[in-house]
Length: 331
Ligand code: PBG
Image (cartoon, rainbow, N blue to C red; front, side, top):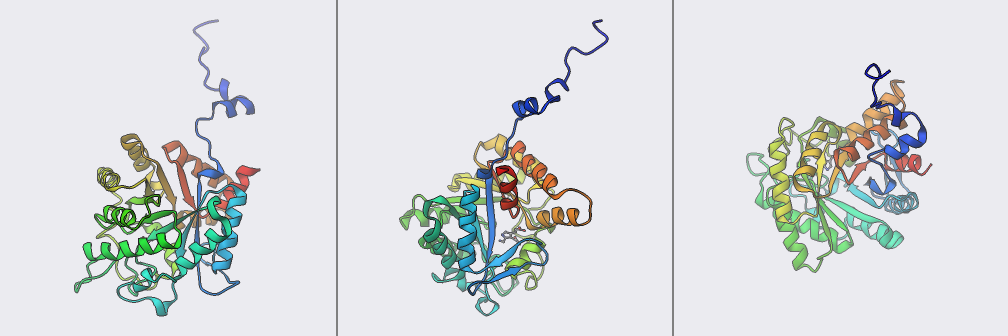
């Protein structure tokens, strides 16, 4: 009987466990994960974050313990975000370049505890330090200035590098900041400090729980649309990435993650540079909410989404679920 049945059966390679394993095209590993952590003042402090169930702010000692946990789980990098006390926030975000700020103390504690085993990625932007919650300095009309902001971001980045940061990750979306930070790192004798640029960062509704976590949400007036990208655009994302590569970025990020898989795919195809996705706070919260509402299995939803980032072309993913995913992967 030929002609009646297919001689190519796509189901043949799907028929058994071993065969599915053999034919799997993308494989997520713990080494693909970057774990974002929120730092707060004090010692022995753990503050659960209401809008991010399962995620807490930790004081510096707890942050060092989380970094050790990352190393044990095979997670190579942690990303740090400070919850600056309100009295240290002002119009120009001066606390960002205090060499003894929360961020710098956390960096040092991790490096003391873990040395070379865990990389420390630090966010560069002013929103955790400004009294208005914007990522930069405001002019008299409330517009976020570009070049004046970049000068402050450079100081912030150098401050982090001096404290021992391994990867500087500017999330502010100012023009020209990658070049300015790269030059300052070279001049400041930090040639091996990497830059992972938040190159295509969208003005997204998925950042809400993060703003609660760093305490900037209640302060923010207006939005960030004059610097973060319009979710409708993708050619523009390629231009952003191209510029950041030319300015000296070692890797680039697309943020948020799941709604922007097409951007990840296009960036990887066009430039072949390491691309990372940020599965942001709202995405995390939605997975947790789905589990809580009985809509889906948290672990299965999570692993499917993380695998999608690998399939789209990512080298890795920033996710608050990093320890959960690593535990699943480690069996
Ligand atoms: C701020 C910054 C934000 C995030 C990372 N860095 C928020 C924002 O741009 O308002 C969001 C991360 C998340 O939602 O998990 N520069």
